[in-house]
Length: 215
Image 1 (cartoon, helix red, strand yellow):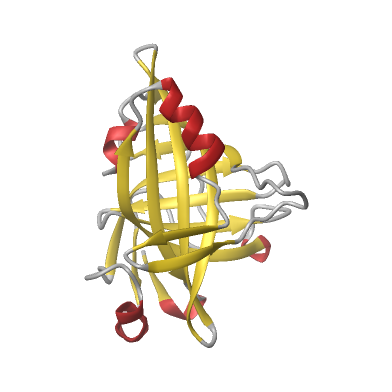
Image 2: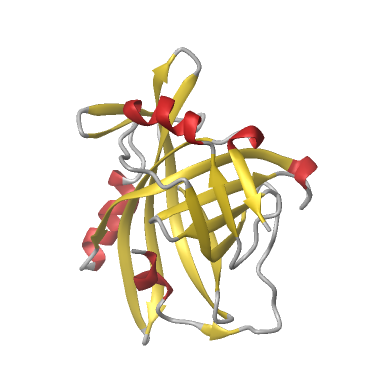
């Protein structure tokens, strides 16, 4: 799915894709089978792979000083690692596995403006009769999407950039677990034209015991 949004590339052979937790571009990891068997019936996703090959790596810097690393896999998924205050494993604050749920093309400037102003950030978001509440709430009445730019590195040495406007939602699936929803308006320039889409993904927490890094 994500190959469409990585279509415009710039050769950056001298820049290495970021690595963390033993995760790296071209590497692979495995997820605990028992964990997935227990949690998957409660999630929107179905048939999640246990073994993942990393085909691209994304990096986004946050205004708070933190960083998001995304390891895109061959199962239409990405493992996301959030860091705060540094680039080592000691600075990791959150790890989630996300699966792409839906992608819709945005065809006009008006649709794009409406998407940013009204659709990405709402008090609640619903898919498949599941209700998710907004996590990132501002002090005032409005909670605008969080803006960031993701740089993506690919196996062939190319890279691309995507501007993103995102909002995070969640719903409780048992007494101590949540399913998370990521609503993202994405924009990049392709052949001097705006290429825009709405991307919806669902995710869940990953613990160190849930993942095995393959060398």
